Image (cartoon, rainbow, N blue to C red; front, side, top):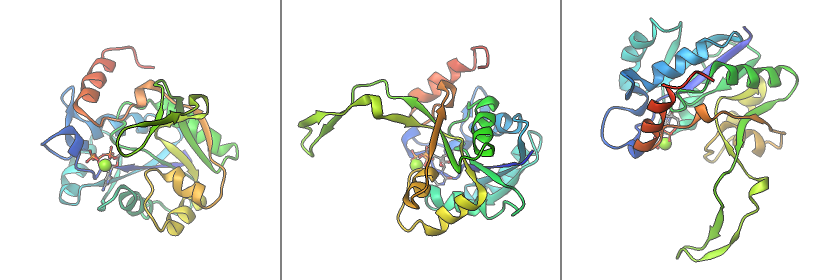
Length: 224
Ligand code: CTP
Ligand code: MG
């Protein structure tokens, strides 16, 4: 494998409600992070996995993941991008492709990692899995009054794993002054192209309690 996967997993999971940090909440009896790392490790291109864990959980996360796959665990930071930067710093310079994958997208299949990595390998500097937007999208003002309807055909809902040539991702992170919600956003600010590949319904992000219910059901389906 020529790929490192960086897994931001240091978030609290506020929107999921009170409880453990989100990556350590259980889905079918196992922490989300275990599901996520198992699928990443099943992708043949993946040589190493670096997890950014909640700072107080670094030892516990290492013990949790050791039976699943060989992983490096570092302490995450205050914002997602700090966690990604901390994990990226642990990726050796001889690895050419880095995938950044949210622990919260814990059912993203190994195939999706391969599709993203292959597109980077074929020469794209930055690659994101994306799906068409299904809802009608309105632009509104602060009072909730509708200003207009957005042309949905040019919109995409973006997932992880997002893939990058390692030098480009490092440059984007070094240049990122203000916050960005995804790593491709930092690459866009550098003025580089980002390309989409088809995403996966299984790569949904566990954000609110209903997402855990959906994910529980997805686990009963044949793997994609
Ligand atoms: N993340 C991280 N470090 C942070 C914040 C988020 O590593 N300081 C990770 C989360 O663990 C998650 C991913 O980034 O895997 C996407 O973030 P999100 O879905 O927002 O998760 P949380 O921040 O944990 O959730 P919430 O915003 O509801 O607190
Ligand atoms: Mg968050």
